[in-house]
Amino acid sequence: MNTQDQWKRYKNYLDFHPEISLMVDINRMAFPDDYFDLIEPRIQKAYRDMDALESGAIANPDEKRMVGHYWLRAPYLAPNPEIALNIKNTLRSIKDFARDAHQGKIVASNGKPFSRLLLIGIGGSALGPQFVSDALQTSKDPIIPFFFDNTDPDGLDRVLAEIGDDLSETMTIVTSKSGNTIETRNGMLEAKAVYESKGLPFGKHAVAITESESHFDRIAKKENWLARFPIWDWVGGRTSETSAVGLLPAALQGIDIDALLEGARLCDEVTRKKETRTNPAALLALMWYHATGGRGKKDMVILPYKDRLQLFPKYLQQLVMESLGKGRDLEGQIVNQGISVYGNKGSTDQHAYIQQLREGVNNFFVTFIEVLKDRQGNSLQVEPDVTSGDYLNGFLQGTRRALSEKGRESITITIEKIDARSLGVLIALYERAVGFYASLINVNAYHQPGVEAGKKTAALVIHLQTETLAFLRREKGKSFTAEEIASAIGSKEEVEMVFKILEHAAANIDHGIRKVSVMPPFRSQYRYEK
Image (cartoon, rainbow, N blue to C red; front, side, top):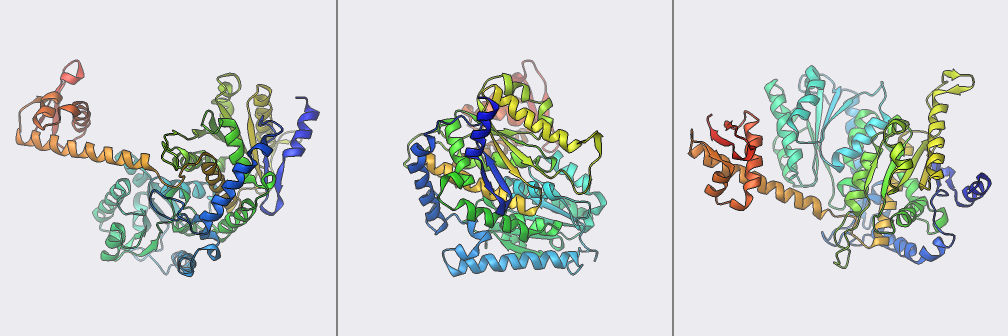
């Protein structure tokens, strides 16, 4: 296609919304001319499904739950006055708490104002807050955030080392809807132990975000934590950024949460409309459907050309893959659906995987995220009439054209600048695009049976470890192979797992397991010597 024809196609398909400073360009997706006419009945069904969801229908049938993250930024849409009041009261409590922390009315156990924040969560309870925190961080933030987002002991130690002596002025937020999330529980116990080792009462530094009467809620109440904020069963972790999960740490950091909510609310209004060619979320969902054949045949590559959006691909990876990666559809038929998502920031990607994207296997489509404003104030001219930001724009436009020349499809999303409002727009845009696409492929976007299956398997591993260690303690001083131990504890079929447990236990000092190495490794012997 020559440049004049490309320009005509660009003008024909460009979707722009000045009220939210958003443009979506789909002209470099190679859909046929009659695509929108053919797909219109299906996207109209997606609109109806979304209307039902927002009205309070059971949109998560497997867990028999409503799905209400859209109400968080528009409480008047909630299906009953009680939910609307809870949302409003929680938002007011978040603002009051953050204001009191900033003004020194809420202080650490040593009487000093809080200057650090440690957020303990996993998945959506950490990814959204991390993304927003990193994107909007400034040198003037009143409270500096840190994150426990895994159960890796070395990772926890690294974060605690960064906080260092400032732990005495660090508030810790523990976020878990059910209170049964193992990674979060472990992080809480590790943090609590460090606080107490320094003579700091954990409860005087701790805040809970959880469901009412959950395990964490009861702990927080019993130990008289600083505060408890609610998360409701109709808010999923990956769509929780506009709940207390995302708003509380953002407010404490000093982020304008009203602007974040406004951006999300305005984007919801735009994407609630049923004129497909001017609905940016519908356009995204339909481009995904075109690119993947509605069967996940191609990967989604997210390339934000802005350092402040470097965590956006990671955030979208969970939102898209956990929502759409499903084995069965709503009728229970095996479909093995999903879209794989990965990404990197531009122009870093110029030196990473653009070579393969342009000339390797064509198993992807790209979404470029373009931010027009480079920085606050003037930029240095690195060449006559050229700034560093001009080069960043040049790399984006050049990469987009280079991929197009090789038949690689791409979408370009353009926003004016990075601020709380624009992040709210991006979050809401993708939340609704995921909802639309889920309707197109007829899956439940709001549960995660695969994640639950992984948790059950982890519980099996811990049970086997308990049995293995108990056996070795009973036989203190005697050495056994993994096969001998598996047989002795009645788990011959799990000998590989027993071997992996022993290898891990022997590599650490915690359990007193000594390894006598033999080649090949699976013939090694293990004994308890503590």
